[in-house]
Structures are given as C-alpha cells and as structure tokens.
Length: 518
Image: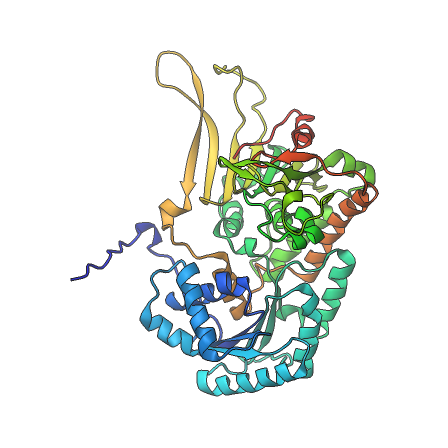
C-alpha cells in the first residue's frame, strides 16, 4: 500500500488570513507559445487553482501564430506545469477542472481575423465557463507587438468601456518589460496604451515586486517601530543594493546587444528596490498612494550630468573566467554577440536621493551577469558609534548592518557587536537571521502568482504606473547620453566569476567604504 506524505501544519502560519480570490475572467495570453507562458504564467495560474484562489468563472486562452488545437495546447501546458510548478505532483482533480478552461486561438497579431476568432471564442466561454465578459489580456510578446495588439483589440470591440458597477465586466492588460527602450519610446508606448485602456486597467509588470521579501519591505519599515525612526541620514551611513547573477546571457545575445544590463535590470528591478527602500510612508496602502511615494523618490534623484556619470557610474563586460569551478565564455564569445561589442553586462552607480530624509547618504547600486554568485540584496549600513569605548581583536568594531535578501534564501539579518563569554572583554560581530523558508515553509508562492491574482482583482499596488516608468527612464537616459559620447571606449573587462571590474571597487573605496560580499 502506498504511503502518503505527512504534511505538518506550520504553527507560524496560524491566524494568517488568505481570503483573496480573483474576479471571474478569461486570461488571454498573447505569445502563448513562448517560454514565459510555459515556465511562469500557466504554472502560476495552476498553483492559484490548487490554493483555491481562482474564481469559479475562469478560463485561459492562448493566442499565438502556430497552428494547434485546444487539446494539443492543453497537453503542452500540462507538461509545462509538470516541469515548472512548485506544487508537485499534479493534483488530478484540480487539473481536470483547470484544463477544461484552457483554449487556444491561432493567428498573427496583425490580422483582424485573429481577433474575430478570439471574440467568438470568448463569447463561447462566457457561456460555458461563466467568465462574465471580463478579460485580462497578458502581452507576453516583444514590445514591437504591443501597439498593434492593442489597436486590434480596440477595433474588434474586445476592450469594454469603463464600468462603474462593482463586480461588473472589465478589460485589463498586463504588459511585460521592457516598457520602452528610452524615455521617448516609453512615452510613445504610454500614449498608445492610453488610446485603448484607462490607466487603472493597465498593469505594467515587474516580477521583482511580486517577491515576498520585496513586499515585506513595506511591512518591515512601516509596521515596526524599531527601525523607521533610524531610517534617515542621521543614523544611516550608506545603502548598498546588489542584483547579481551567475549566468551569462543564456543564448539571448541578440537581445542583450540591444539592451545591456542597464536596460535589463537597472532601469526596472533595481530602481524599484531603491524606491521601496527610500520612499516616505504612504498615507494608505491604496495603489496610487504607494506609487505616489515611489515617484517622489525618482524625482528626488540627483541628476546625472556627463561629468557626474564619469565620477559615479562604472560599467563592465564579462570576459572568460570560472563560475563555480566551471569555465565560462566571455560575453564577446557568446552566440549572436559582436566581436567588438561595447554593451555593458555590469554596472555600478553611486546615487543620491536629494530630499530631507536622505540628503548626503550615498546609495551604491550594482547589477551584473556572470558574477561570483546569484544574489539580490539590500543592505543598510548604520553609522559607527560616536565614541569607541571598546576594542576588538581586529582593531575595529564593524558597523551595524541590516540586510534583506531578496533571492535566493529569502531572509533578513541584523549584524551587531557582542562580547565573548569569559574574563576578558573580547568583542565579536554576530548576526541575527530570519529565514522565510524556516519560518513559513519553503513552498512559498512565486512572484507571478501574487501579481496575476492582483491583476485579476484590479489591485495595481505592485505594478508600475505610467509616470513611474517615465521617471525611471528619465534618470537612466542621462547615463546613456554620457555613454554615447564615449561610444569608442570599450567598458573594462572583468573575469567571469568575480564581483565586477576593479573600477567598481574604486568607486566605493574612494569614500572609505567597500562592497559587501553577500
């Protein structure tokens, strides 16, 4: 007889309220044959079904160019869920109902016939699945396709007008990054979106905002009285934000030649982490109240004039090296990368938020490919004590550091100084660690689960607003303007498996500080 695994309740989960259910709708995924759909979107929706967060009236409609039947698409999605869902093995009962709501429409994004077939398909599942004429369109496609898809949706009558009745039908759109290539293209895209959708129905997704530790930044700061009084220039020496990856461009050389790490990570993920770290307390948790405060941070960033870019920004490109003992190609040796490419795969910046709270406090931020390890972390280093009464064996007392690990091994740690047991006063630096996996279980929801559910519920708190996107580009464009004037100068190389070029160490060392080795 087969023995079933025993699942023990985690006592720390007792009392947690999980009453969030999405509104009835059909999720229409443009680009349904792509990796994002297979690896993230459909597994996330299945996980929501297992957790009973999906409404009874729910369906998935894949739209892509390849010809295939509903049955073949369902089979592909079952294979994807089997490979990428965090809930294993597949629950037969849940999957049986889940797959009945999966359908497929083949056609090009430019052809009006595609949208007529889509309209007919949606009309049918409204009756069969109870989706109540509500649509959540997910654009898992190239940014070049955003405009034409929205135009065709509008022309086909698939975008309903504003509905003021609570619980009435809706039409919302989720747009993947990159949202533009610069400020001008982001503004043009915002205008194109506004011609079809109201801003309240537009969800520009940044999956970092769906990560549990990122969400917890607001709770950590504004639900605890211990740290918020210290969260300012009087007590904080500097802030470090690191977004490091071990992997290279993973066969995306053509894509990376167009974007580089600044567009791929800094303009969106890293800037969002900076905003959540530096923002003022919002007046409420309403989406616009939170996003208003993030926009204020972006508008407070000290401008990057050409001379200040030279002083405060370092870029680099990975060369051959070793990552975890295995030899790694240099960026220029990757497929579809130019032999003399000047695209940056690493960037480090010293950024200042010129407002009352943060005046004079440097934010050292860095992001890169082929670094020593995969880690995303925010580290708050507090100022040294004003007068040293004690001495440690290594000649100095390390400052207090509060570090928040976003990925992997999500955790919060506080470093402090304590005395060793014994007759002599010997000081040691210790850390108190809180690990999400140990406290709440390792099978925590993934970012796309939270974000898809929020979009179904119409909650835009964890999505970026149009002015937020434009302010991010306005800052980053200043860096690109300075780099264009140095187009003939290649970025310095750094060996794969290191923490970036030496110039990045010099950037922070000039102020008497050094990068953490997370």
